[in-house]
Length: 96
Image (cartoon, rainbow, N blue to C red):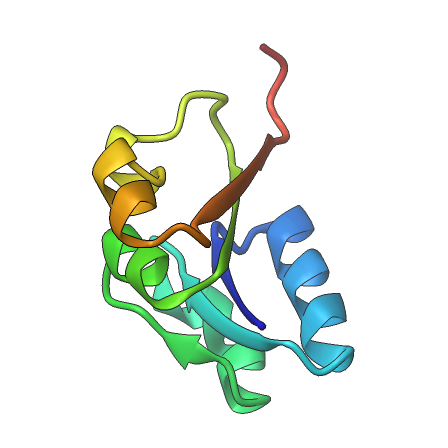
């Protein structure tokens, strides 16, 4: 299963690393690519944009510092209709 991660801070990077250790294929994106280096060194694929992550994965996690992700990061209705397997899971670490 291909899993996408957008947001590789303290929480997202560790969650992604644990899934990678269990053998899941990852596609990752972060505002700063250097945060993804440990995952990329272990075989994760880089996506140049959040939208690209969503197009390439079956499950998408977002771990962002704000509770309202950009609409372009979500599985849209049109994405779900063309990709029935499109699923999202979101989390954030800031107080609402």
